[in-house]
Amino acid sequence: MNIERASEHVWSLRSWVIIPIHVWIVVEEDGVTLVDAGISMMAKGILEFIERLQAGPLLRIVLTHGHSDHVGAIERILRERQVPVYAHCAEIPFMEGDLPYPRRRKAGMSVAKGLAQALREDAQGGMEPMGSLMPFWTPGHSPGHVVYYHEKDRVLLAGDLFTSKHGQLHRPMPLFTADMREAVNSSVVVRRLNPHRLEVCHGNPVFQPADHLDEYIRKTAERFAFAVDAPM
Image 1 (cartoon, rainbow, N blue to C red):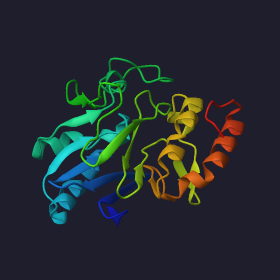
Image 2: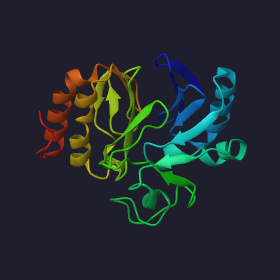
Image 3: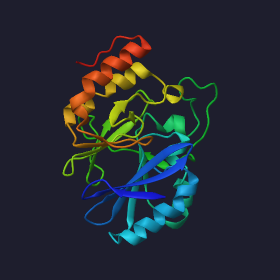
């Protein structure tokens, strides 16, 4: 497993199975948050790195979404660390197998029923912070896809909202993306937050991503022949 320090408080852990798969460890005041859980073979490396980091215990696991390459190590991690797991409320019926993900013929359970709880919302319907991370709902790749922003470090953990190519934003994998148009519309969160560094699950980091967001939107809309609601 490759380990890279993304910022003062954020570490990126990467494994390879045909394509790169990243998860992230975020150092909090009283322990650490794990963002996504990769595939099952990553569990040992994740737990060993948390011990080696000596920043405190694992406090929680937060998910960008419930696809199998983002939740695979959860079961093995929870055998050793009893911590809560969070996902967007819109994602839970799909990851628990009650509904088939869009564009898939059959439902499939990627996380056991009752294991994950919904990210907390405030009275206005916005999501509450999870430790030092602020979640933002970014549907499209999946119905309940979420990105997490570390404001102090200006790092956006974007899951599968994008991939990356040559240091630039690139579209999420079409085969596994429920609604590419909706995913592109969700990408405007980058302009709103203006992170210094954007991390994706499948690819390398993108720096100052807001600077080329318009080009990403234009190219992706042209490639898939749709109009976008996202402001250019």
